[in-house]
Image 1: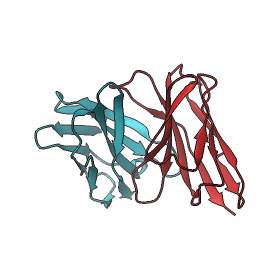
Image 2: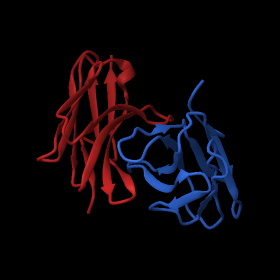
Image 3: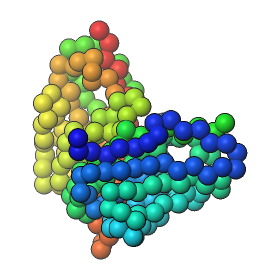
Length: 113
Length: 115
């Protein structure tokens, strides 16, 4: 099946712990994105990458880190510096740059213990 | 400030009825506008995408309209079904010189279809 796979579906973080959310795509898309979704708010961009080994900060990058070592993979690490990590995290990928459709994964719900 | 505002925030309709969701935006320069459907606990799925030169686009029972002059879009759902219950998100692509497009997301309209 072609698509974007996020794992795990649910994740719990302890105080002071770093956790990593996985995002894999087999759509051969160059661009990948990480968004955070909070209740009653629009999706907010955390980080994005338009090509392997390159990524840029989005609107709310503080407390997060990413890597893009392979075209298919764009993992997101939620560090202990992110003081309010509880949210629904969505990964997306797209081809092209301007007129494109972003395809989203099923999401990871992160909660703090 | 580039913003996308959706109304209503939530909507309850009976199965079989039609409904219209609204999206107003202040994004400029504008590249394209998309409507996504997001089921609870799932990722958004694209319904339609329109450039500034398109006035309407359909996808089955979903019809989106765009008025680039007034910066308004609507999503009309015909003969609603229980499976239409979801959040509908309006997304506008903001054209940034030499950087491609940046997406501005609305907060979504929560639609509930009752039997």
